[in-house]
Image (cartoon, rainbow, N blue to C red; front, top):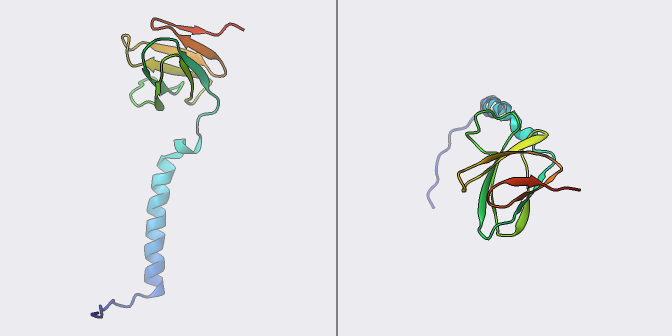
Length: 121
């Protein structure tokens, strides 16, 4: 095996390199602060149709609704817990004309293929 020459680096050069990398990573992490606050609470969403649904959820304060908080597939006659940030979340069904529904967390909703109905206690 051939010996490869590695130039000797001083401890101060290594410390400086680690410091620069750490500061750059800190800048990236600071800009992604939203990831530190995951959604709290969920909406129970029942697909009461005979077809599979794909739904997107959006945060309560997301006025543009360009990037979803999550995208989920719900099998026919099945329910899932959907989440996003805020006490209310926006749920968009990616079929049936792509309607958008505002739902309160901690509640259960039924989608019948035309509309969303809250569970009546």
